Image (cartoon, rainbow, N blue to C red; front, side, top):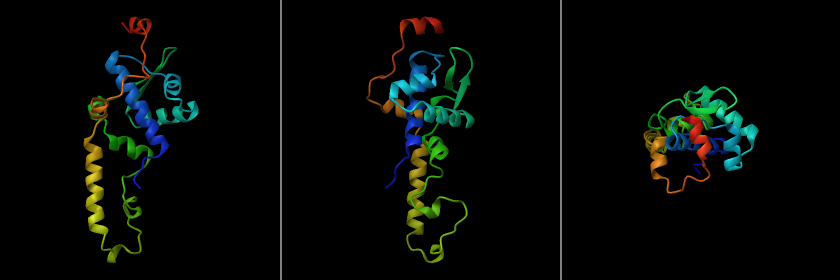
Length: 157
């Protein structure tokens, strides 16, 4: 079954939250603690996820007492594939597509290799063409759990 691991799912929730909050209040900074409390995610795990997203240039760390994270790129320039590859590795429908070097002993005589390769490429293309901004547009969920108080909005002004 094709399935994202928990870190990937948390990364999607985190980056979506940061993007949605920035859409609501331009320049808004999101702390790891805020995210952890909003989605009931373990803080230490989320801190590592945020650090990896930052190391890969998808979000930027903002230092200081009101520090946290902001998007490093526009949400339209961050693809679903970008996040999947950070936490799940290469998109692969079969183990033989996971690594660049083929090590499968059945490779030469495999009759499903080419159809699976084509399927793999279609899935990768769909993930790489879907941006975080696309996910925000398609979400029917309310902005919950995001709540930006009037005081926070004033502090950003």
